Image (cartoon, rainbow, N blue to C red):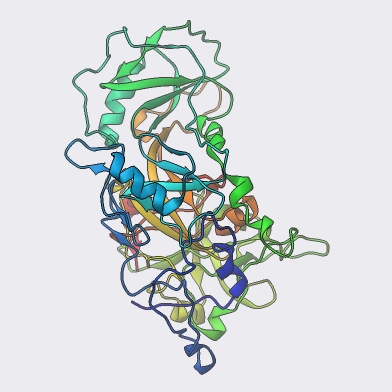
Length: 478
């Protein structure tokens, strides 16, 4: 596997900046050499991408992280659920990680500690795990409405899919159609053990307590009725005061970015820094708000090649510069997909010849675009942004939302609703770093499939739009 080591040691340090998210220190990984020149060929980092996989079976629930040394598993594959540890297993956990409080939800566990282990395992006995400070208890957000009533007959009792799995697009359409007589729905979120229905807000409809089905398709169903989407409430799980990298850096005003020129020194790859081409006196260009991360090279059935960037980062100019304005203009925006937050860039001949998808810094390199129905619940992915270094993500929710329509216009049919994945973020991320990661491909560890591009993140969760429309247009990883 080709590997490119970041030439910015400050960015490499970000994921080691918090002991609660450091998967690198003392982790047994192979050394890698930079591709640049003799000055960097001897450069090795303890957290470069290893020769062997960081994961065992990362394509669904029950994956084991390379730092997970538990001699047992908590994943019950036959019943498709996580079990609680027995007394002997609890003794092993406390001996390994201390005697702080320990807790489990249906899909993750947490351990309280003032001295988190190094390296941090992202799973414990194959169950996703987070380490938190003493006195902290992560909770899953729950809608506060009293609308659900489990005694109302299930409107689609014959509809079913496996436990802790996502429905297909067709199953989602069937469910929404069955719920349509009961409620005006704007979005629906499938989580591992229950479903959350977002009701349209401000439409004048009033729902009485216990007036909506509490069991739909055999699953517990809850209802969110507020102006903001439900995923905003999911921020209550945040551990920001423990994982905010600004607490561990020398400067709280500007977090580092990798502004190395890879076009001139190595090669262009996913994960490099790009910047919009508009500059004016007094502008903020050069700050993290004006720069995003380069995506992947795509080729369509006609043989046309483009590279993706974050659409919202290039609204003022079509020019794409690397790493900053004033250095190399590597291409121009030739087309856009605003609904995906993607812009297509036609590279200059020099940039096109340099670009390769074979390297993705510390993350898995992209090999294909993955259809939404192939994204499994519990699967792990990696993203490597110019402001972050490696960040691990785990898909635990599937979100369907109605496109925004002006008042008085016909509603969009369910089959045309936008589909997104809800990814739990395992890494040192704050809002500034998240802005810089935008545009980076989210690459599944097991298959190398690109499940989406990093966009909406609150530091704890990241929403990524499914790429079925791009695949239908005939685009694939070049």
